[in-house]
Image: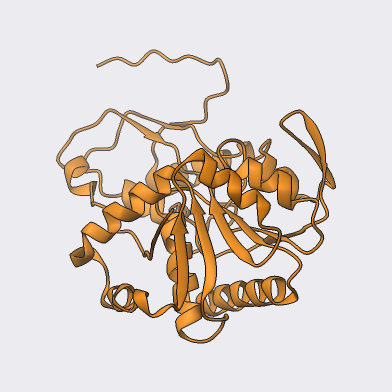
Length: 289
């Protein structure tokens, strides 16, 4: 295994390219957020986020009876969680030297990319990276399947971050199979869980799920921590759409739960007076130049 430390990720701005194009069709595939009128993350939300994280880590690991398992998307979300944990350890909100395992090859590669472009990272995060060698947080990136399987032998005392974020695929399913039945463990969701996914069923309180063809009892504590959404909210999406110099002839909302997608389509119609449709499965449209 390779040990390192991590941080937050920056994104390229592509809006300028879109502004220069006269598009006739726009596809909107991020209508997910259930609180569409939420704006930028407020300081109060950050305080709540850090308090929830610190409470969960200290109570679970301090009791010495289980692990903290965090399903997370490999790009962006994993790096944000690592940033939060490193900051909490630096400020003494969680115990120093907490063992954190990142069990996702894609997350490992994404973190390496982030660290190669430190000039794009904010000064506070760069300072966290610079102090990474002081033992504040012990982060290990697993690579092989054998290394991943060895984590199943650890029954308490560690944080495991693994993909996929909604638990429908990836190594996280193995960690859930071993930790869901443990009363001392905690499964912490930090992002939206779509209807029909394993993550959503756990968040909704199912007490028994199927993994790898087996029935698994849910005895672990299931928690949801908000404040790390990777999606733009309704206000952010509308602001993005307003950058189009020429309105598209048609706009399709193709991602998100049905009620949320229709609510967002209505918002676009009301705010921009565009022609907006929410396709259903199997529906087809003829697009002309």
